[in-house]
Length: 409
Image (cartoon, rainbow, N blue to C red; front, side):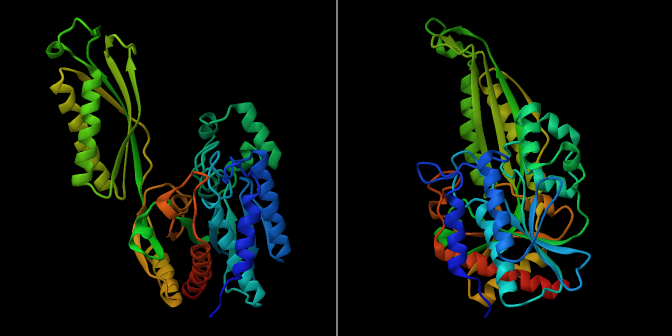
């Protein structure tokens, strides 16, 4: 059975981890910073060394290409991203790019010309240092000029980072593709479900939607010593009750959905004043719009109940949602057939983090799969996936592409 070159893949992982390395064993390669650009140059050199063709589009997305003969009109793409969060881990994103590259190298080593052109892709700024999922948004036509106004860096810094790569706002907006036949991505799980179950591969059947709501509880400021407890309209009491009840309610009624309150600000914000106003940032995630609608209705009902209990008013404002992305049954089955051929155990599961795959799913059959993460640690220097699981992931990428070539040629 055809296999990847294990030594080459693992050496690549070690080499790449030196770029942007941090003192505690992690990596720091935010998008289009010098470390990220160095990793891109490294990736381009690896592509040339392998005898594959190289391209970079107007969004800065890099591709290693193994052409069919004659070159097909459409292409099967695989990959992920090389950029990282500040002081992140060495596997998140990087492993997905390297296993796609290694799959193409393994085919080339065996003299196999695919029936459909294959690409191993490094997408720009998956980690949202500038604009979330920026490179894949550009490819599927979801990037707009307004996104640049909402960039997480100022206009001058945005121009500097684009110039360092030789791209512009205009080239970003013109990077839309219409030649994607299918997409597949490997990623570390960033959780413990596979590790806990002793399962080799998680086949993602949906990437969850994300909804965020800005909440404000309003009561009455009062002297923290002289105002009797039973007469207080303490906005923080209402917010605290909501946080605990939302936790219990979602765990009981919407598992495996999740809810989070990640920001709380109390005003006036003094030791000796009863809080008059509390602002909360509420976020919740699930795998389908219907479930998200139910969660939202129930969470808003809880907000109003908690406000009424403590004689408060409450207001809430939604932000634009991230829509759930359902994965392609045909691509999921290709992954599963590859896993079965290799003898890997597998199960279907939701992805609770966002990935480039959710954008690609808008224009082509797309799916992704996970390999285990030790302890579920991610976005952290201690992030770790075993060599054996990395190799499993790469062999599965190779055989998934072979399955897709059979299905789609």
